[in-house]
Image 1 (cartoon, rainbow, N blue to C red):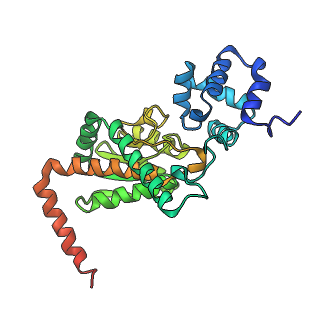
Image 2: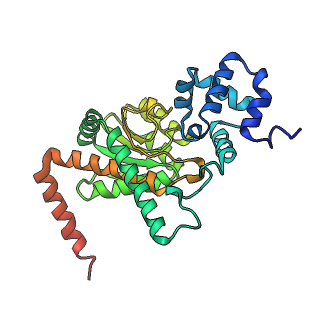
Image 3: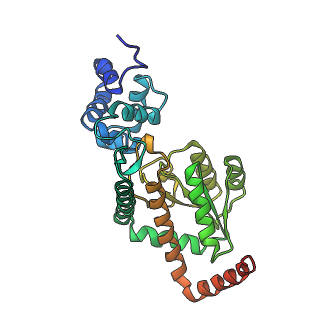
Length: 288
C-alpha cells in the first residue's frame, strides 16, 4: 500500500473515509462529486457547498496529511490532471498541437470571458460605496502580495494620474509598519485574488484597529480577508493552482480598477480633467 503522503488525493479520501467524522464525510462526498470544481474554490466556498464550518474543512485536509487548504487544492489539481486539461498551466486550454492562430484565439476568449464574468459580479452599490470611501480619503495605500502587488502598483499609478494621495506599499514589513500609523480618514485599497494570505490578514486587522477603511478587490467575497473589508469588489475568472497569477485573473482585477477609477473621477469630472492636464503638462518634459 502506498504511503498516504504519496497517494492520489482521491485515494487518500477513499482510504481514510471510514475514519472521518460525519461532518468530515460531508466534505469528502462533496469533493468526490465535484472533483474539478474543488480546485477553484476558497475554503469558505467549499464549506458552504458542503454545509459545514470552515474549521471542519481545515480538519479534513489535515487529517488527509496536508499542511493546509491550498496544499490540498494543489493535490486535487494534480490528481485530476489529464482529465480535460485541469493540469494545464496555460490558460485557455492551450495545447502543444495548436497553431499560433488557435493559441491567440483561445487566450483572447479566456481574457474576454474573465471580463464578462467580472461584469456580472460587480455590484453597483458596492462600487458607489467604494467611490464614497475613496473620495473622502486623506490618503489611499495600494497593497497586495505577489502578483497582486503588481496590480496594486498599477492601481496607484492609475489613480495618481488624477489624484495626489494614492501610494503603493510593496514590502509586507513596510505594509504592517504603515498600517500602524493609519487614521480614521485613511484607506487601504487591497488587491488579493484569494483574499486569504497571512500578510493581508495581519495588515487588515491592524488597519481596522486604527479605524482605517479597507476596499478589497478579490475573487472570493467570503474569504477571511473579505470579512475584514468595508467594501468588497469581486472580480471574475477561476484559476487552478497550476495557473497562479494568470493574465486572465489580472485582467479581471484591472477591469475592476478601471471601473472604480471612472466611478471616482465622475464625481467631479471638470476637476479631474484639470488635474490630468496638469499631470500631462508635467510629464511632457520627459518626452523628446
